[in-house]
View 1 (cartoon, rainbow, N blue to C red):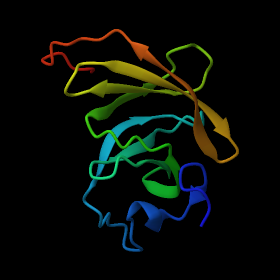
View 2: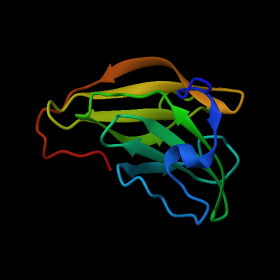
View 3: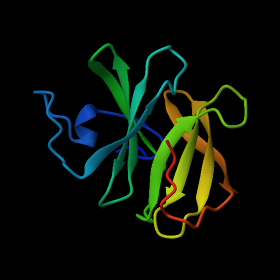
View 4: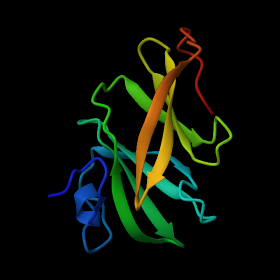
Length: 134
């Protein structure tokens, strides 16, 4: 199998069966965003048991492809948003640590059919855990 963090993969890798049912209940929708710039939102998934991250490429209500993103196996970190933080027209992933209130961003770049983290940096910490990214 190719490197799961950077390769374009079959939908069954994210637990989607031929019947369109997601059978692996550890995968949760983290957020939606137009990652690939095609004008349609993609679904970003996070596996709450393993820290794996994935994306579904949608065309209408149909899933036309999926790929893994880099894993983050520290499960206190939650993927809370995907937006262009730095103005480079590529989506960046925003993370929040549910235990410490730390916040971070992953600068993402497209390489072929995959998205990879080109750099990461911390954002200001909000240690009051009653604050949430919306």
